[in-house]
Amino acid sequence: MGIWFASLHMSINNWILAVVVIIVLAFLVTLLNDIYTTYVKGLPPGPWSLPVIGGLYMLNPRQPHISMEKLIQKYGKMFTVQFGFLGPTVFICDSALPYKVYSHNLPDRPSLPVFKYLNRSEEGIGSIQYSPCHRQLRRMCLQAMNNIDSTSIQHHTNKAFKIFFQNLAMENPVDPKKDIIKMTTALFATYIYGLSYQNFEDPVVTQLCHNQQVILSVLFPGHPFNILPWTIHITSKWSKQFITAVKERDSILQRQYSLLDSPRQTNTTPLSVLGHMAAMRHQHPDKSSMEAIKMSCWTKEVAGMSTTQNSIQWLMLYLAINPDVQDRAVALMKSVVPVDRMPTLADKPQLPYIEAIVMEVLRIAPPVPLGIPHTSLQHTISMESYTLPKGTMALCNIWHIHHNEKYWKKPNTFKPERFIGNNGKCIPHHKLKHFLPFGHGKRSCVGENVARNILFLFTCALLKCTRLLIDDCEIPDMNGFVTLGLEPFPHKLNIRLQEHVDLNELFTGTTSTYSSDKRKYDQLDHGD
Image 1 (cartoon, helix red, strand yellow):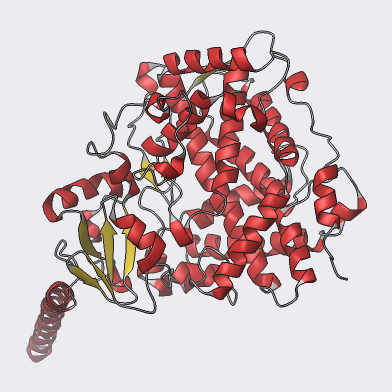
Image 2 (image 1 turned 60 degrees about the horizontal axis):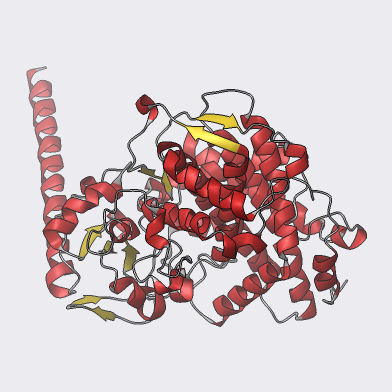
């Protein structure tokens, strides 16, 4: 027996020794890799890494944009963080450098495991590498969105806004987040897919809301599904939810594609981006595959929905905190727009302050605070005094640029007037070098104009129909938290419908005929 215990004791000691040796070797290999990355490869310096997780321990998972400020102070406008098995990621925190990233040097997308699973065999415009295929998809997307005229956009927004305000009128104070998610999901699903719905409780809208929240939660490069890609295939609550959401997404896309004939059969059905892109492909069969088109439409829908819903949450919160901004905007709108109708896109040039409100929301709470990942799969890039080997992932810290006192006076203060020029008009966003809410250059957001128009129309509707207030105890941490985009922490608003507001009268046009849209659609040869 004594011999057995002695043998067991030696075995345990050997196991402990083996574990210690493995841990020491893991730290040594990680240290050598950091030294190699900085001093041999020539990447910017950054925090020392830990085994497996790299430098992610330095980033607060809820507020990485805030914890990154310390890294900027220590390492400057460019630094490298090891993202576990994904390898080094370079963060760019200076407004001059993103233009080089977006326009010339890093036009590709890194091959992230989650994107691979989402896209399967065909990639959409969001993740496809920069190539003739990307340029063709981008042209098709822009043309499809341009083919849907402002009358149809007004129809889409009127229907969604009316249901939204009717729902909000039921109780106070209220956290509007759930209704905002439903509204933006229904709005973009109609605009992109041609989805038909009667209210936000529609089963397809409900399913889309759930699926998209699941998928959005895993899109950040630092998510475990990207750092440890094999975890997608391990049975767990999170992997099951993700895999189910992708399957249901594919089913909805296929169903909406199968209904593309419906716009030709009735004049009362909104025409969709998916319909226009499919028609273009029928006219020119050499264009991108139908699967690539469906994935591109899904990318536009989920990106537009997520960024717009976050921007609307921030818009309502900042307006509630700043009643003087509400007063000024309402006074301007009353002087321009008759009391018995809603503002339209045609009124935009006469409402510069409202457009400035939208721009200030996009500045102070950028939709994607750390940008979308970029890389170069073809060439090694030289930037400043550093070298970025091909395949290196880079992220632009838009939050830091938008809150840098070097570029913005009192950057943490909500001041829409900063976007009003000396001529009294809103400063064109392309003239603002430090304003990058939608990226820039070859991979800039194709839906930027649509998103800005929807935010403008919603701001007008909000000011026309409601008065927003918030109790001091309800004001959250205004730095927000990061999923893929930047979201405000939970809070409740007091939302009062303005006196004598008749939602049915104001939100007319929900049964318009889309004759202009239909003429554009019918001019295309749809094939069989």
